[in-house]
Amino acid sequence: MAYENIIVETRGPVGLIRLNRPQALNALNSALLGELNDALGVFDLDGRIGAIVITGSEKAFAAGADIKEMQSLDFVDAYMKDFIGDWEKVPRIRKPIIAAVAGYALGGGCELAMMCDFIIAAKTAKFGQPEITLGVMPGMGGTQRLARFIGKAKAMDLCLTGRMMDADEAERCGLVARVVPSQELIEEAINAAAKIASFSQPVVMMTKETVNRAYETTLTEGLRFERRLFHSMFALEDQKEGMAAFSDKRTPSFKNR
Ligand code: CO8
Image (cartoon, rainbow, N blue to C red; front, side, top):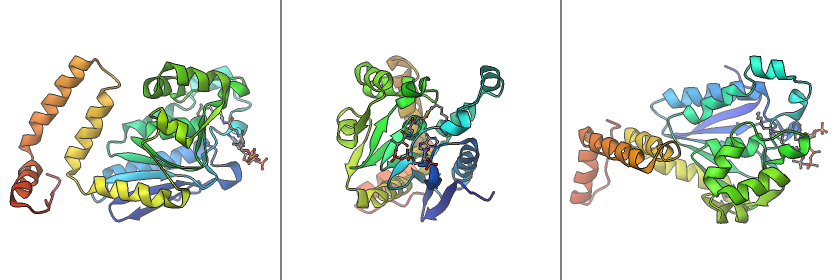
C-alpha cells in the first residue's frame, strides 16, 4: 500500500511511523487512519520488527481528529458507519508501541498517544482534550484512558475545561514516561524501542498483554493471569538462554522461541 499521510521506515528492529499531514498539523482523518492501521499491521506480522515508534512533527504529534472531515457528519451516518470505530485496531497491535510526542497532542492526538504503550515527550509537548470547545467530547478513549491513567481530578480538568498541559505536568501526573529535549526525542524513542526489540519477542508481547490486563480486570484476576503467563515462560528456550547467560556472565542471545 502506498502511503500519502504517513512516512514509514525501519531502523534496524524498530518500525518508525511518522504522521505526515503538515498542512493540517497531522489532524487524523480516515485516510491517515487506514494507512496507520495498515502499517501497524505489517510491522506486527514482521518477525524482524520488535517494537514500533509513532511520531509526528516538531510542531504537532497530532492536533486531533480532522475537524473539517467531521464538521458535516450527522448522527445516523456516525452511528451506522461506526465513525472512528477502526481506531480500536491500534491498541490491538501486539508488539509494543512508543509514542514520541513533540508539540500538540490534542483531542484524538492525545488519545492516539494514550493507545500506545508509553509516551516519551519532548519539552515542547502539549497535551489536551479540547473537544468541549467544539461542542463535543472525546470519542477515541479520552474520557476513559485519561481517568485511568492520571485519575479523575486531572481527567475532569482537561476534558471539562479543554486546557492544555505541558510536558512537565504530563510527566508529573503519570501520562508521560520520560521528558527529553526536543532534539533528542526521536533518538531516545528509537533507542528505547531497540532495547525492547533486543529482548525475547514472546516475553515482550506477553509483558505488554499482562500490563494492559491491569486496566481491564480485577487485581485478583490480573495477578492470576500474570502468574499463568509467568509459568508458561518456563517453556521458552529464551528463558533457559536468559538465565544461563546470567550465570555464565555473558550477554544472552534470544531466539524468540
Ligand atoms: N482538524 C483539521 N485541521 C486542523 C486541525 C484539526 N484538528 N488542527 C489544525 N488544523 C489546521 C488549521 O485549520 C490550519 O489550516 P489552514 O492553514 O488551512 O487554516 C492548520 O492546521 C494550522 O493550524 P493553525 O493555523 O490553527 O495553527 P496554530 O499554530 O495557530 O494553532 C492549534 C495550533 C492550537 C493546535 C490549533 O490549530 C487548534 O486549536 N487546532 C484544533 C485542536 C482541536 O480542537 N483538536 C480536537 C479535535 S476534535 C477530536 O479530536 C475528537 C476526537 C474524537 C474523534 C477521534 C477521531 C480521529
